[in-house]
View 1: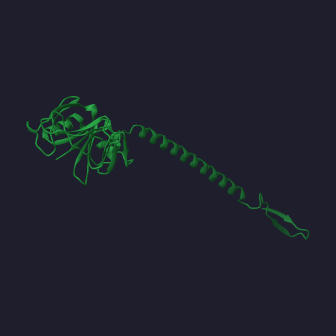
View 2: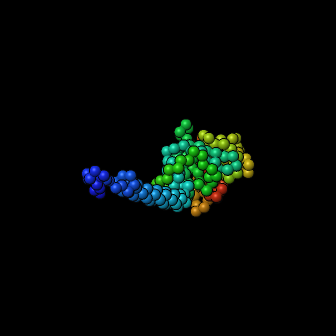
Length: 237
């Protein structure tokens, strides 16, 4: 504040202003600093978003189909197995190289080698690596079926059929004919019988009609099937 004297000799106060207000400079700097802080915060958010996106891409690149299937245990999926063959059911279990579906309508179970899966419909994005798979592979699963003496229907590669509630098995040769029951389509076939033995990369199937026990008189053929030809193994009890 500066003291001046008027024409009549009386002192008068006169306020000297820098920019129209005694605090305008401070307010301008405060706004400048706030703007700078906002820019820094925005830059940090962009860097964080980029880091999260890159991390997500890296993690996604490590996710396997087994991880996705494990995350979908209990949910319904539809598997395309090639040549027009499809199977639908709830994911009940999975292991190293196989997945087990259960048809809630019929109670039938479908053992599918993951190597035979061409497409998966209705698979969620959830991943469950801790439950990714049982430790045993397809051969152990097939040996369990062999010990159970379960009647199964085995679909081989090239089958052209739809199996929403299981693969349909048509009429085949009867006992003593020397050929198995089932039908052939698109270069593949469906064989019905009991798994007698399981090797390292193949199985032996005693073919017999559905609904009868595996007895010598009912066996129509002994067929050896390499694992690589398996598309679907379905319970037929």
